[in-house]
Length: 419
Image (cartoon, rainbow, N blue to C red; front, side, top):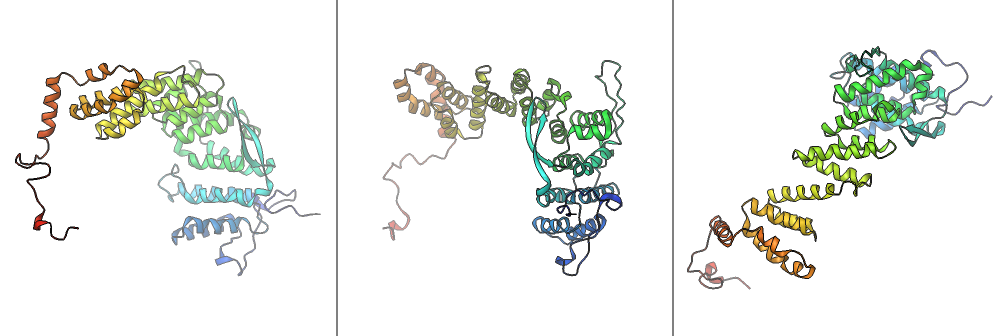
């Protein structure tokens, strides 16, 4: 019978733990290959202690996984399980801390298993995403096992007394894998929600939802929580509660990603509105996110002030930082934004510079038929402008009155040596 390709699942029985043995050879590069996941982990940790750079460790890790007789999906999963147990024993500060060696292994798995992987359409709430996975469900099963073990510490017995709005959650750092590694396992193996429910039943889906909800709403780990919800297409998070929570936390990109995966404009509009509400309290980042979301979802006509408010806030910040010239360029030909530059300069006490800008803009207004008088009115009365100009002169060192522009001064040494 033809032997299966390297890394593929074989119908023949494998040794206990799902990992075939590797044969050590003196010809192996620096003795990097190791016969079991435990020995491989020891070798990688030793290389880490030796101070090898990431790209050097990556080559060694690939060599370990690509060795003959290794069933890569099981081997990598067993290695991650060993690392996770070491983390709980004190290798990292807590089990919620990302282990770089675990991510190193996950990065190397797709490269050495390309021949047993496929592209597959995954549901993402109301959208679809094309991603890679192990073609054989038996190759995905080690990843499924890791995820289910990570969720096993969670009590999914929810208190549905008021319609399911209150959940009793356990602390997330009891999970065996840290959230980012758990997500990386799902991505690397291509584990779907269907894979989890096939192996763990509906309890697995409820436990996963509880875990993601705790990350987002309780632990403040928004990125892994949202990415888990999107990867496994957890519809329970496709709502305004999630978008509002992410927006309040400043995770505007994640809020936009959630809204983008939900059909219709309802949640997309709420995303823009929530960002604008932050802008009402003076949050510049909120206005920037509102403009970005309106552009992404093509809601410029629904929220016509989103762009203007963001640009106006940007101009005010530029002027406050002494970047008035850049602010004027940023305003472009927009008369409202030009007036915003002038008003900001006047408000900051620099009416003299504002008057210079007004004089520069005068020809443009004459050609466009704009309301130049309204622009001039921002400078205040002649008396106020003269006082501002005098204050500006007094703020700088003045040359003696008897020195003229070209005369009254001379070069030191009589200009000797000048061309």
